[in-house]
View 1 (cartoon, one colour):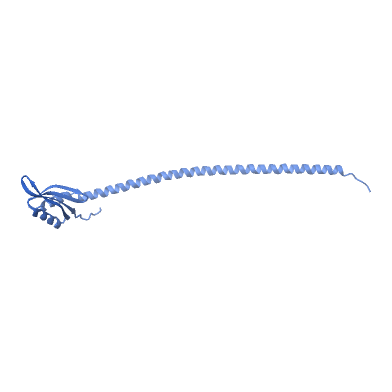
View 2: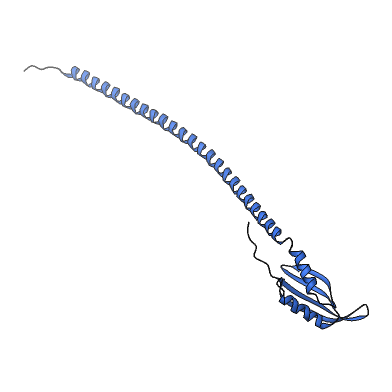
Length: 185
């Protein structure tokens, strides 16, 4: 039997296998590094696009918020203008009411009764004055109760007094108003 020394051939084959292994290992690591680099580039580009989109959306939201605040302000101004219009319309309807009330009060005041003060407070009038006779005050109360313009007269105070050396009855009474229904234009 012939003996062959295969040791040098095995050494060269082993060396070739190791070189191939190292080349494949370096190529694999290079591929992984290249793949990581490409992935990083793609992801950072995508992140930048998303940041730009978010910035655009934030600007659009801020613009819409400003428009919404302006719209609320315009609505409030519109509401205030409508309230002023309604108030002016009510004044227009009632502009002759004061003259009518004073004229009717003058007609209802009996002889011997003198009004000294007339005050309006929250839809009610306070009348104060003097009457030569106590029946003049009750006559005024009755006349105010029967009138179409005045409602619910109440005598608050009646006392005796002396004015210009004459004995009189001093009185204070309150009376409400009947208001006609206001029509809207």
